[in-house]
Length: 231
Image (cartoon, rainbow, N blue to C red):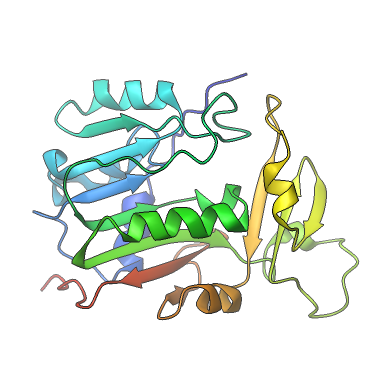
C-alpha cells in the first residue's frame, strides 16, 4: 500500500480566509490530519512553528514533517482508517497533546469518515479548545459536488449524508457500515454532508461555502468569544 504524502500547501490560505483573517502569531494551533505540515508552508511567518501541532494517522508523513519542521510538533495518531491507516486501532481517542488550543483545523479529514466517527472526533476536538478557541473543518456537500452527475436521484431529493465506498453508494447508512471490517489497500471512502444537516448536528455552527474554486465547504465552531481579526 502506497504511503499517503500530501503535496497540498493551500490549507493556511483557505482557513485564513474562512476565519476572516485571525491573528495566528502566538496562538496554539492543532492541524488535525495535517499530514506533512503543508499548512506551515503556506503560513510563512504568520505562524510560530513551536506553537504548531500536527496529528495524523500516516506515520511516514509525520516523520517527514518532523524532518522538514524540527521546531513544530508532529505526533503520530495510530487510529484506524480504511485508506490511510488500515492497521491502526479502531476508536482510538485523540491523545492529550499538552496545551489547550486556540485554533484547531481539519482539512479534508471528515470527508473520509462515517457520520458517527465525525461526531465523536469533533466533540473530542472541541474539548481541547481554549474557552475562546475555534474549530474549523471542511466537508463535501452532496448538493453541489460533481460526484452526483449521472446519479438517478429525484430532483432536489438529496440525502442528509452519504458515503461512497469503492464506487458503491450508501445513502444515510447506519453504524453497520462503520463497523464492517474494511481496510483493504487502496479502498476509497468518501463522505458527503449537507450544510443544513451539519447545522442540526452542531448547533451554533457557522457553515460557509467553499472559499476557493474547490468543492470543500467549511464548518466553524467557536468558543464563547471569537478570535480577534488582524488590523
